[in-house]
Structures are given as C-alpha cells and as structure tokens.
Length: 203
Image (cartoon, rainbow, N blue to C red; front, side, top):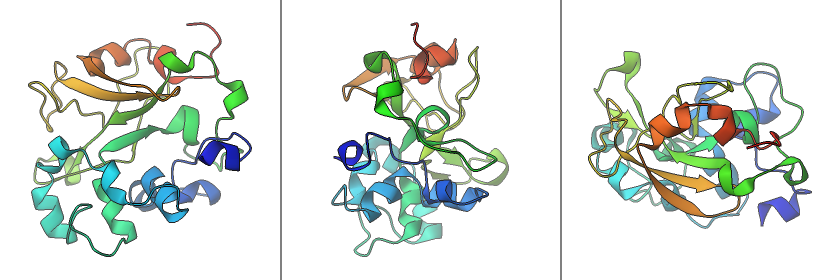
C-alpha cells in the first residue's frame, strides 16, 4: 500500500529523514514502525514486536513505561520496542547529510535476494546488558564484510546479548517473502552489499 501511494518509493527510516540533521533519538523512537503507524498504514504497533525478543525487554519496559503489547495509547516512545530493523542505508535513507530520497522500486534488482528487515536489539548505555530494547534499523553500509550492527538472531539457541552468530535470524526480503536464516548474522556480514544493496545489478 505504501509504495503505490508514494510513487513507488520505500518509506524513510524515521521521521528524521525529513530534517537537515538526524538526531539519534528520532532514529530509534520515530523509526519505520512509527512512520507506518502514524500514517495509518498499519493498525497497531504490536506487529513490530517479536514475541521472542519481547521477553527480554522486561527491564527496559519498566524504565520506559509499558510495551507495544500493553500500551493503550500509542506514543513515540513505544517504538523503542520495535524488534525489526529496517535496511536503512540502502532502502530507507542514510546518515549524516539530509538524503535526497529513499529507494525507488524501479531501481531495485534481485528483490528476492535483498534484505528489507532483520531482527534487531540493542542494550543499555555503553553496551552493558543492563536492559534491552528494540532497534528500528540496523547498520551495514559497506560492500565487503561489514558487520551488521544491532542485528540479533534470537531463535534456536540465539541470545539477545551478546548476539549469538549461530542463532536463527528472522529475515524479510524486498519481494515480501520471509525466511528464518540459520547463522544469518554470519552469512549476511560476508559481502554484505550482496544482501543489502538493491541498486546493485549483479548478484
């Protein structure tokens, strides 16, 4: 629905896409989930919270007051709990200077082999495991062997922190299909541009 309504452009990674500088607060709180929910493309924020990951966000919920599944009133803060990270740099915008546009569908190639969303998680200040929350985007911006920051394989021996590379990673692709990728963090960190960059014509 979003693409036909927006001349086949993908959604921005956050509200801050439209601003000259991207405050980190907006990247995390007013992320893709917030963009789609606030523009009435999804009826509830609950779809952005993985049931497996949500079990680990308990302490974070206490700090921030609620969760996607318990909030009766949707505020910007609840999207901290988004468990699904957007392919921000290649599809939904970039960091630093204000980007000109998001990805346009006609410029995308190999849709069944290019990543749209991955399961994500982040931790408390300094990387400490004092609390966990979601992350509405993940970082992976170089073509060769870029480690995918904030990606968190939670299934089948997966752990929230530190990320277990052997865990199974829920993966949504640009053509709309979803797979569970065993050792997906390892797989996608090798030649990451192959998996992330839809403008790349060769596979």
